[in-house]
Amino acid sequence: MHKDYLSREEIARLQEKRFRETVERIFKRSPYYQKKLKEHGIKPVDIRGLADIHLLPFTSKNDLRGQYPFGMAAVSLKKILRLHASSGTTGKPIVSGYTRRDLSVWADAVSRICQMAGVTREDIAQISFGYGLFTGGFGLHYGLEKLGAMVVPFSSGNTERQLSLMQDFHTTVLVSTPSFALYMAEQARELGYDPASFHLRLGLFGGEPCSDLMRQEIEKEWGLKATLNYGLTEVMGPGIAGECSERNGMHLLEDYFYAEIIDPKTGERLPDGEKGELVLTPLTKEAFPVLRYRTGDITRLIDSPCPCGRTGRRMDYITGRSDDMVIVKGVNIFPSQVEEVLSTFPEVSPHYRLVLIRQKGFIKDLEVQVELTPQGFSDSFRELEQLEEKIRSRLRSTLSLGPKVKLMEPKSLERTTGKSRRIVEVEKGELE
Ligand code: ADP
Ligand code: ZN
Image 1: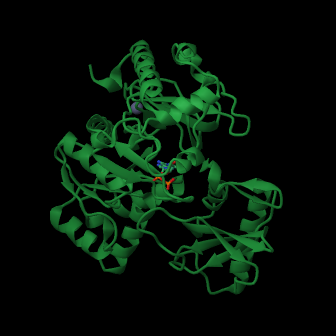
Image 2: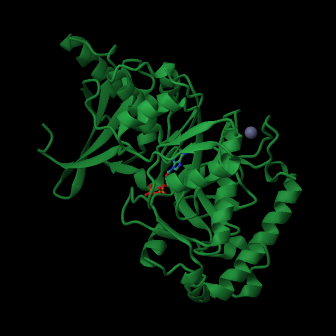
Image 3: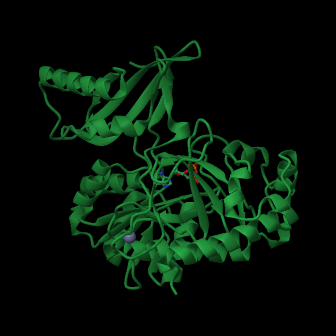
């Protein structure tokens, strides 16, 4: 039976079995967890099954950083065939290793995610994720190959060449971050192409949040169907969850990953359906196993049946990562909240950033810089001023804080070939 269609009971049984094997393996082979669990007074007999998982301590990004580079290994280094590292969006990179079996699980997981999204063996897929330490490129590569699609391993950068090959090859699937898909469309226009004249029919996007506005814009520009998928290096890489064609959340591959949602402040486990921090325990990982990894990503689990018939529960779209949250004048703000407000204004584009203005080591103020669309751009100073004020006032009522708003000319904010940086810090006085 295909793993995406197991009954809930079968999934639960498989999870139970694999969790027990994981715990046994960890107690036997992981020096890091042997020590950590001992410190917490936990013995193998205490963890009889998933019902006892709450007794295990969480593992955090900092724990992993402290084990740099190979402290998390639970197999001899001879058995590790590949290393990757997180892209370091929020600090020092984290290393992840893979045994032969880990690599085969990974390819299987990603191929299922791609199939869910609608990729078939007829497709020609261009991978515009970076190839290298970042898990995106190689992760999608082996998954798509396993599925049987034709892979164009372009990697990131060199947009002009990407576009010309996409056109020559009649590429049908684009794999990238949502930011890059948007940027490529912009570049295509600049170079005189009409993006809709390409043969792209499907997009597989991941690695960073994608707002509805961004998704619509990408779809409109390329004339493709955009699907999102989710993953992180510490747990494996891409291939943890992905959208089916219904696009109502991302199906988790629950035969490989056990998911919990906790209150990020207290660490308490939250009831099903509530929003909180996603905690993942991979159930088959051999090389660098982790228990109850705190992803920092805020979401909720959806367990209503999906019309596609797949039985893996879905995770909702990520509204922010806990380390993306900024505190300005005592108010907690996620970039996604700002984005939501901005998306209600047709005059502005999905390109924006939050500039934190620091003074003597403290964050004093927030400036939201947002790019106008070419249509939203106006020569009338008064009109622009009024728009600025409208945005500011809507932000004020959503955030309980009225940040400065600065409208920027179309195409003036920095573009990226990887993940966007939505938050920047400057010293007071550095802003012109
Ligand atoms: P880094 O932490 O350096 O960005 P990774 O490359 O491993 O390292 O990225 C994993 C993170 O990327 C996730 O924890 C999550 O915050 C973000 N991410 C990945 N996929 C998505 C997605 N579909 N939606 C929102 N965020 C995502
Ligand atoms: Zn579905």
